[in-house]
Length: 148
Image 1: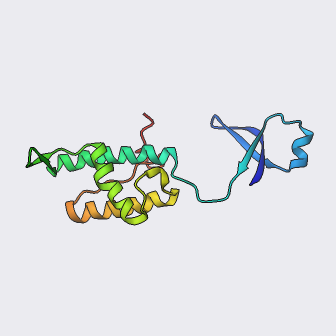
Image 2: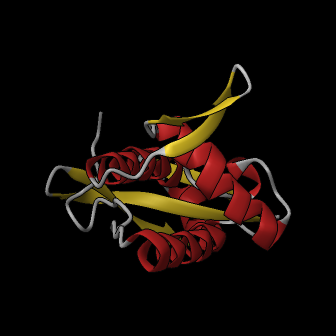
């Protein structure tokens, strides 16, 4: 495990800005305005932002499927019935099935950060080819990410 020492150097657009420091320099300023980070080796797991975006994606896909008249077939009282899609059913029945087929993980928290986009690419292709449903993955960069 490595240690990275960052010194507060100001703000830009209301966000604190830090710059790397040498360990000897950090001793000179006696820890004032210093951020110490422990770096671990290994692959990063999916982030909280990716998780929020995944569930927002599920909601948006559910809306597109429902608005397109594409229902989910379920069995109720031994009869096959149509049911509307929900955020949860998209995430559970579409996303997690593809995720498990690709990476063998049932939990999204077990995915690495780069695997989220790989699952999205497959889900997006399948929905587009089979149901003509296209939905961009929400992010703060495309203006689709909802902070709520």
